Amino acid sequence: MMRVLVATDAWRPQVNGVVRSLEYLAREAPSFGADIGFLTPDDFRSVPLPGYREIRLALPSVGRVERAIKSIGPDSVHIATEGPIGWITRYVCQTRGYPFTTSYHTRFPEYLAARLPVPLRWSYAALRRFHNGGDGTMVGSPMLEQALKAHGFRNLMPWSRGVDAELFRPRSVRPLAFPGPVFLYVGRIAVEKNLEAFLALDLPGSKVVVGDGPLRASLQARFPQVDFLGMRTGQALADVYASADVFVFPSLTDTFGMVILEALACGLPVAAFPVMGPLDVIGRSGCGCLDADLRRAALAALQVPREKCRTYALTFTWRESVRQFLDNVKRAHGMPADAALHPGYVLTSAPSPRQTTSPAPASASRSASPVAATPRRRG
Image (cartoon, rainbow, N blue to C red; front, top):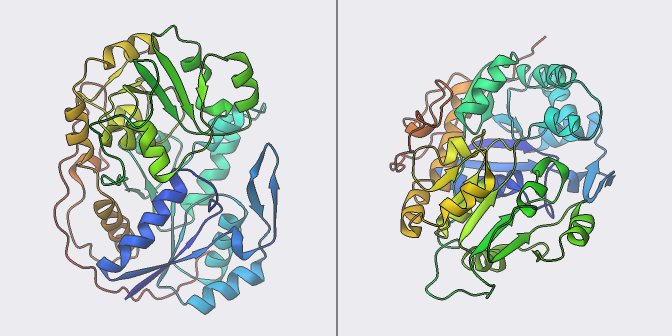
């Protein structure tokens, strides 16, 4: 059985796309003949992250990371985040010769620039150095691939996402009652999510927000007519999706937007700006409206058939996502992959609103054979 150790600064109790992706990775990998272990903030002393006290910032040491890798004995290491655990693990892998891959989940340069006067080129230079040191960097969409290529990133590999279609599904009766039509946002309540662009819209019915973050108190005070429900997960979150009419995604900086898939699986059309993430996921599927005028997009989305959204969401499966991840690991280390890539996410060129195609349903995959990667020293 192939063993992959995933080093991540993002971990429970955080609720975000990175953590959910890793949870499903661990759940599905054994069916492909692979075992996933984790190196997380739970393994180290940690302190609250300034500005996000709900997030713990790990304080790893080289010695502890090296001992963890030796005790697990992985065939490969995957570094999921660029935080302290990610940087220390990268250092250990490079100096001790362990093969590793990385993934790019978050546009940190843009997030940092939204808070501090830090030039984008400085941040991208640091991240380019981080990711180019590995054997491959996994990205969630063609547009992200093209953006990173323009900044000098190399060895980019596609890793799409899935959705739990059993949990997130339409209901015959709405679990929650709000005056309709109901426009919903789910995600972190922070400056980089551009949430105010949604809250300030003149829309009929109700606006509902699910999530938490540093801006919640101030936005809740400024927009008292909006229903702020706080953090919800699992069935409680699925109930909210199933009670809405349109999912509004105002972010300009997300790399994918897994909440878009959850909304679609519940039959919700999506209203968003025509930017990375929505363009990649929605594309020409007809399951949402992408417009520089977010109000116009939200109102137009009301006309999209809910069953169309559900059918499209079913083409994104976690099993296919995990197969793709494991194929990437093997390919990065010179081993053959088991199956063709998900046709909607072969990294070729960035899509435009007219060029984006809908991903085809995932085909069945054969079980992966174990990979015995030989540790090698890099400069």
